Image (cartoon, rainbow, N blue to C red):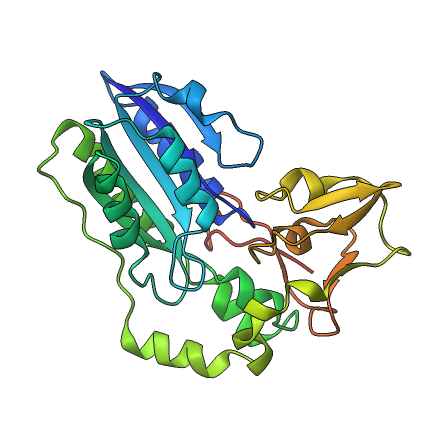
Length: 274
């Protein structure tokens, strides 16, 4: 069975889950991983259409929905009659993202199989959280490597036994309500703040990491310095990945947590830069 893994990732949560799932799938007899591809504006999806029997898709939940670019990629890579399974990563609530993505897959003629929802540390909230604070430590502790391993193993098993449908993520009401209480007001207004992104010339080393890591191709380089366009999806990968913290979103992101996910650590997934 040929399995292709296609995922959208901004700050890196979904990327590390996709890589771990690929490791689990490679250990399964009879499964061949034909590609592990990150959604990007430069990817030629048409070339991947004949390279899978089952498509495993992954995406983060952005404001209750799957990123638009993930849907665009699915439209280009979908082949009628083939099966699609996958996962989403979320922090507060997964919303109807999986339902909507599965509906799109069925509309394109694909057979939607098992999906799992994986709770991760909230990259948006961490960016507006002061370093070395109790809140930062609490938010980074949301990830459970044991629970995630079980979900990914069950998802891998569903490829061989399609009737096995892994359960979705759990999101206790107490944690959800507590989370809402922790969100500063400017985080709620984040969707309208893409224009506030700026690169500080005194800190920028012209490494180009922000431009290479932007999934929507929104960042270009002019004389080595980043220039922001109008296609920002607010994944905030550029801010989290900048090694010198040259990219900011106004004063609210100064001296706050920068989140660099790795897999796994004894205390969880998060690796905050302090």
